[in-house]
Every structure is written in structure tokens, then in C-alpha cells.
Image (cartoon, rainbow, N blue to C red; front, side):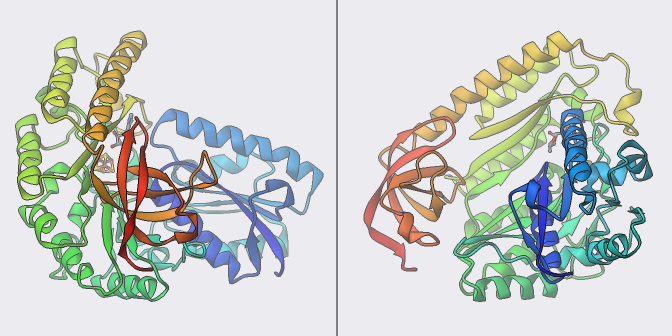
Length: 446
Ligand code: 5AD
Ligand code: SF4
């Protein structure tokens, strides 16, 4: 291999984005350079998601579209990975004759060898085995030059089996990385100038539970808090039932832990939470939110909500709305319930009519928009510490960055300070971002 181009098309969560970067890092060692133009590619990889039907369909149509490129360039290798590939395996090869490679969520480290085999033999391969130790979790992928934030996988898989969710089937059971390996990786990132780490896992709160090690998630965060150079720690995703008092205390004790938590509630109705197999009720959830806010009054809390789960009546839906009114999330991602093959919820009766589902979703989203705006507006006039990530998406002359509470801020005069921590006074607030003005003082010089 040598001087070849790799194009990766990514769907889904931050874990997938990170895995695509890991694939690129691995293939770079094997002579492939990443391109953002699929027409120039010698190797195309579609990294898929199957959390909801829509995500799966999008990946399928994208794969279909690459057939034309393969027709024009028979030497092109097209591969598919991620959760949908894990779920469908061999079926993918049958469905897409132009596909040479299907790899699963535990097989990322094997991609170079698989690609070499395709190159050497022209044969087609499927590798979707589950492994006890997932080698790929520790593949180092440094962010592009000057980008100050990096993802670090700390665990993969899930043992919770929420009745609607396909993750335990496509990512396997929980596997945690060794604490020292994570710390070594983060130190290496800090040495390269990284200031912020985002710890990734399907359920980070249960980090370490399936290992003999004496390091749980709160211990891990505390240890990362002592690494020189790392000025911000974030993590995602948390299961409310595993959110410990120790972790809540980290929000007041670990100075570099950012004031934001994504804590998916899914529903505000105890009956629906039971049917979802979430193992907590609305009161417990609200209590955790109260504890978080008393440990860290400025914490931003975001959530996920599923609308139209089987058995959800108007009254159950109103309980979700009531919970949202009481808590007032900084933001919430809401989804229509989507039936996934192999999950327990498929067998539940009392499916909700699609028109009712859509009406409820619309209502809930309008409510959340009001809450998000209200929360964002409380920042007007205040100074916020912002880590500059680069030029703003909509206006290349402006800089963009995030507050510690994970809100996007755009402002003039900061693009040459990519990677710096600056102080910004918030002037205006919108639904998806804040507008600010750079203060003279720099929080921490670059
Ligand atoms: N239908 C709708 N939403 C789902 N999610 C997970 N599975 C489903 C499903 N079958 C949502 C949950 C989860 C988020 C990542 O995706 O809200 O927190
Ligand atoms: Fe899916 Fe529940 Fe595991 Fe989250 S905790 S990945 S929703 S099974």
C-alpha cells in the first residue's frame, strides 16, 4: 500500500466519529491518506448506526450510491462498519455486490489486514466476531492540527438492555479499558497540546464495574483531574441509575470537570420507564437532578426523550411534559420511538399511532425550544470561559468555541487564537448558539 486515498462516511454518535478517526489513524500507518472527496478514494468506508430505523436507512442508501463509483473504478474497495454492519454481517454482502468488506464493532484493529487481503485476493470478507478484549479501544487518534479537544474511549458496550435499545446486541456487553491505559493516553494527548478530553462510553457511569480493578468512574475522573495540561473534562453518556454520589461530588471537587451532564431521562412516566426497563422512576431522576444542582448550581443538564413508546397514553406523555417543566433542561434531544429488530419492546402491545406520536413530538420540541432559549438567555451579560475550536461554521471570519457548560459561542476576532482559552462576554442568545464579544483578558495563555 502507499499514497492511497481513504474516504470515510460517518453516521451516528460521537463514538462513531471517534472510531472513524481511529480507522483513519490506522490506515495512515498503512499508506492511506484521508480525503473528503469520495470520487478520489481508493478505499471507502461507511461507518453506520442503527439506533433508529432512519439512521439505518440513511447508511443503506449511501452505500447504494457508492455502487456507481465502483462501476467507474473497479479497483475501488468499499467497506462497511459500525452498528448496522455488526447487526447485518453477511446480509450486507448479499445486498450490495459492490461491497468487499464488512467489519463489526469489535474488529476495527483488523481493518488494515482485511484491506490487504481484499487487495491481494479480490475476495470479500466479513468480520463481525465479538471479542473479550477489544484491542481497538486504545487506538490513538490525534485530532487535526491545533484542535484542542480529543475523544477518549473508556468503555464500550452495555449490560442494561433497555427494552427499546439495540446497543447491547450490536456493541456487546460492557468492556472497560484499564485505568492506567486511559491515563497514559490522556497524558500523551496533553503532551500534544490537547486541553479538553471527552470520555466516551455507552454508559460511562458503570466504568470499571466488570473489572477487578479498584477504579470506578468517579476515581477515574478524579485522576484525570490531576493531569497537567488537561483543562477540561467532559463525558458522555450517563445512565441515571448509575450516577453515583461520588460522581456528583466530582462536579464540585474536580476543578477541570466541566459543568455539563447529558443524562437521558427517556420518559417522565413511571409506567413507561418500567416498560423501558430503565430501573429508575421519575422521583429518583428528579432527586439526582436536585443533587447535581446543589453540588454545582451552574451545571447545564441535557437529556434524551423517546416519544410514543408502546403503551404511552396522553397521561403518560403529560407526565413527561410535567417533568420537563419542573426540571427545565438546557437542551433535550427527542425521538419518535423506532422499533428495532431483536429488542424486547418489539413484543410489547399498545403501539402508538404514528400521527399521535408526531403530534406529541412536535409539542415536546416546542416546549424544549422555549426552555433552551430561556436557559441560554440567562447567560446574556455574563463572562464565560471559552475554548476556541476554530472558525465559525456560518461565518469564516468569526471564531467558534464552547463554554464549560457546552454551549456554542461565536464571536469576532478570535480565529488566530484556535486552541486558546479566552474570556467572552455573552451579548445575545439563540436556540443553537450564543453570540459574544472577546474580553481583553485571556483566561489561560496559549
Ligand atoms: N427509538 C427511539 N429512540 C431511541 N434511542 C435509542 N433507541 C431508540 C429507539 N429504538 C434514543 C434514546 C437514547 C438515544 C441515543 O437514542 O433516547 O438515549
Ligand atoms: Fe441502550 Fe439503555 Fe444501554 Fe443506553 S443504557 S446503550 S439506552 S441499553
